[in-house]
Image (cartoon, rainbow, N blue to C red):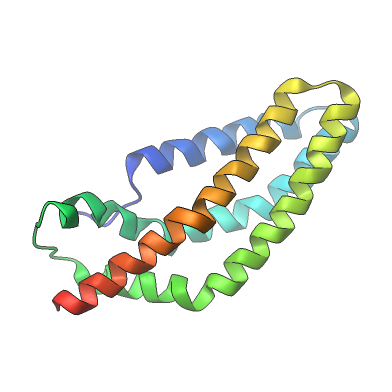
Length: 147
């Protein structure tokens, strides 16, 4: 069993990234705001996929009582997330501010598609804060108990 980001989350990240990349190509204030948002979002996505989200790939196997062969890397990733959580949440604040500027630019330009994108990325970040990050940390804590 590989320790990877669950396919559904990876696909969601790819979709958000692809849509934001398209928005960065727009002219004027909307494109400028999209480029600024992408600048803060991209390195954050890289970190999430490196250590914050892979432990979530173990949720279903753990719920089914499967033995986890790669517990040590998952524990290390979860511990890193726990240690870096204040930074990750601070990045969410910066991302949220950039998304707010993108939403304002899109609203002013009458661009409903980009406005929806900004709202969708903001909702995704909230889900990470409320569900994904705590769940990833719990995976690591649970695996430590099993070890």
